[in-house]
Length: 150
Image 1 (cartoon, one colour):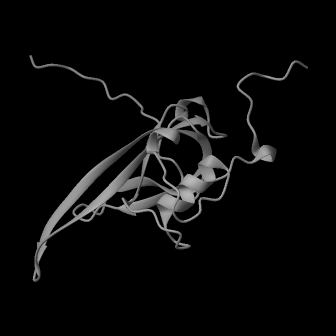
Image 2 (image 1 turned 180 degrees about the vertical axis):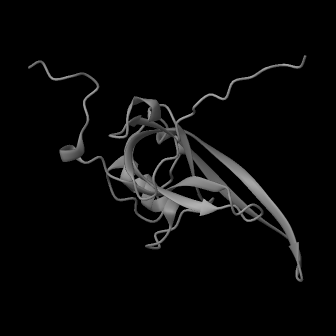
């Protein structure tokens, strides 16, 4: 007789698209992407921002989930530059041209993150979650670590 296994129910822990959660920045890693096209070998450096959800209204089983956001490894003052926008949000202040940013100064800081979904290029049945936006901590949305005393 072979091995007998019983199918167990597993809850879908996919973070809903456009949902917002409190998260702490755990680490920023730099990675180089290489490819070849008609112009020859190409490469680009990106930053992977790894976040851990610390508070959510979806339930305790989502707390501790890690989600990745990415941006080019270049900071400019252009309005669409994610590195600049995310760093400003975390630091709570404007970052002028010429100022240096050490990614270690961002680690451990909290923000609200908005979740996006991206379909896998090779397997349309797979959906990847990613950090779409980094927003300032909203005091009105604030979730306490402890229950109120009343």
